[in-house]
Length: 397
Image 1 (cartoon, rainbow, N blue to C red):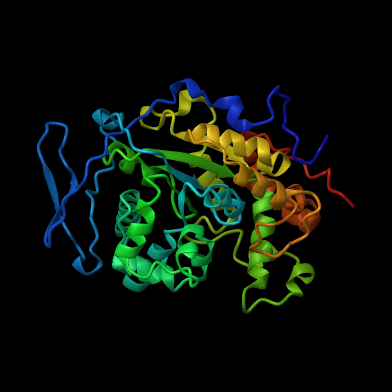
Image 2: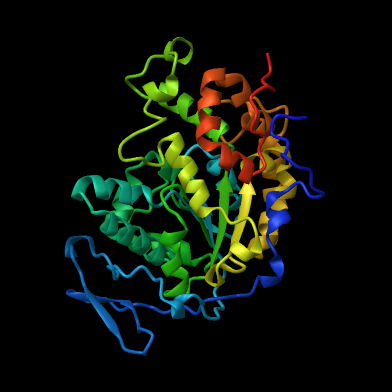
């Protein structure tokens, strides 16, 4: 049996096809634009009784459209209404889950405007202004909401232009050699050329963060939930941390417990940086059967395992394009073939040009037996949930 063979056999090799029912793939959500002035914003145009609700801004310097702290759990707020907007594709995942190459499936499409990790900006803003959890989420929603309308905050543009990740934005890079948005209006002009066909990847979000954008704002989100074998993700995180300044290469072989030494196994409070936090995030956001998908998410959620893409990149790419309702361009198909084939040998940390199968399964050689045992003990239910083999006795020599 191969390393990542399912615990039980199925006719179809994709988790997405096993569990998701596309007959409910209806177009949902009529967009409602909020109106902002200098002192207050309309977080949601009306409540259940049709009465307008307003909320005071907390920090005017950041021009943030703050939202109510309401958890949106009322029964009447479970359905989104009809929309004619093009799809806004969001790859929802965590760091070192393989999202960079999955993002390229849309970034390489000349009909789509793609931004690489826009919530990086909120990470910096949170460090700068010491946001509460609620304020951070409000900022994150505000950036995604504005992006859906091809509008951008000045602080967002400045932070993204100062970040090396900007070079992953094909459309922006084609507009100028420095790959800079330059100004909000210039970024908006470039974005609007794509007729609302937008895409991004988020490694700092979850379904709860995105729900109000669908239910209240009516944005036509198509959410691709990318998951990965926790052992593969942990091995990639170890490699990443070792390359960071302050850690020595000798740690790769000398340290008895690299997960603990590198801060990847446990912390207080627990975060998605650790193995435990990573598996908690997967448990919370993974929806395997149509019965588990809430009404507001029907037709909007698609689960894909990184290993399935790595083993069958073209087939999974077609599957993803079928889900979002866009044609798969021949140039995207060619990019997938040339960047995931077995002859590819670029193993640099952030490269999207590598042997996809080898990259997905290399943890078998990279992790120590003790590290695998610790991860499996912590995430055994997640391994079974996603049909990964939960035994380490198949390690290669």
